[in-house]
Amino acid sequence: MSLNELIARGIRQQSNRFREHNEVVRRRVADAVDALGLVLPGESFRERLLKGNALALAPGEHGGSVLDKEDTALQGVAPGAVLTRRLVVENDAVIENITVSTDEGDNCVNVKSPATVVFRGCTFERPLTSATSVVAVDAGAKVVLLGCVFRGSATTAQPVVSHGGPAASVQIAFCYNKTGNTLFTGGTATGTGNV
Image (cartoon, rainbow, N blue to C red; front, side):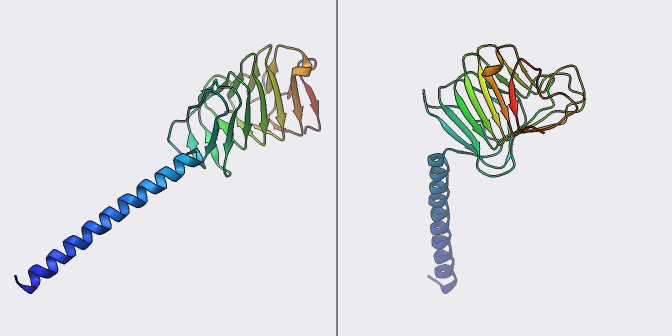
């Protein structure tokens, strides 16, 4: 065997080892991401457990979803986790540090009865041509909005947060309403410290 043949054989063996090593590293990274429950941009997210799901959205654009399992926690792990489609919540949940920015003609978020949902540090954005509420809360559902920001929607007859049930069922505290709409209609929610 010539020297060139020996060198070529060694390079091929070394190249195969690098490929195998890279494949092992890729698998380990994928396993770590799965173990953390991290949802990368463009991936669909769903609740896999019957109760107590924890979903962490990485920065980037994600589609909307229907959360229907009890005690789900949905949070952005860093600024920039954006839902670009409607979020429907049908069961108890805590949603934190998420931006919901939709161009659809419907609400950004719809909370269904009998869900109890807490939104902390979320931003809700609608296009200027929107004529619907940003957050719709069905009668029988309960919602707490804490430190949230509302942006975008043009001045319409609809409040930013709409609710057909008793005022005590929707608590809005320390939020910033940067829309031309009223934040809520008196008698349908309770608010404090909002600007």
